[in-house]
Image (cartoon, rainbow, N blue to C red; front, side):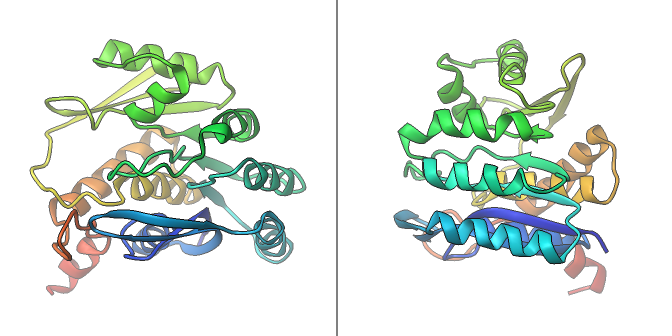
Length: 265
């Protein structure tokens, strides 16, 4: 069994963040570990408060895991302060780095800022250059690049511009566009377009976290990048299609639907 590490914030309602990552790792038959960067008070209606973890504790979590366990892939999610970002970069720099997936989590679905404005440059400078792939959605890509993205050609341009910031590969997620769901993967030379019918389900809490952690799990298992993205999109599509209606707002995706379905439950 491959070992996957998530470095991200905790979601108290269990649909996104660390919880979504660990569920995804387990559903895809990898062993999940976590480094918690922040604690959030959130439910299906939104994020109401956050508390960042001391950077020294973030570093220590990373280093004790690397000292003891072989890590086959890493996913980085919510890292909201400059000090935490630098602590992660410094700690990861002490070890041979496995495939690293960086999901630049910036704003929650309810509009809560999860990345402090002053931290954006540090995220780009410290983590993008060591990333095997970054997975911004359209709003995140627009925020980083400073221009609007309205169609697939804009997504291709954004992927090129993001690639210039250092990551080996870029996946621009087009879920905020109208019509079919289209994602653009760029490896520095070639584009790969992933197009699927949009799923009519409101329970999409944690989709970005889940997709990026699924990519990390598939990379850990040895899949080629294009196949890792394809299989991960298939996984998240199924999870969205069978989203779970809990609470009063946007429920989480169903991370274990395939496993439950196989058992006939």
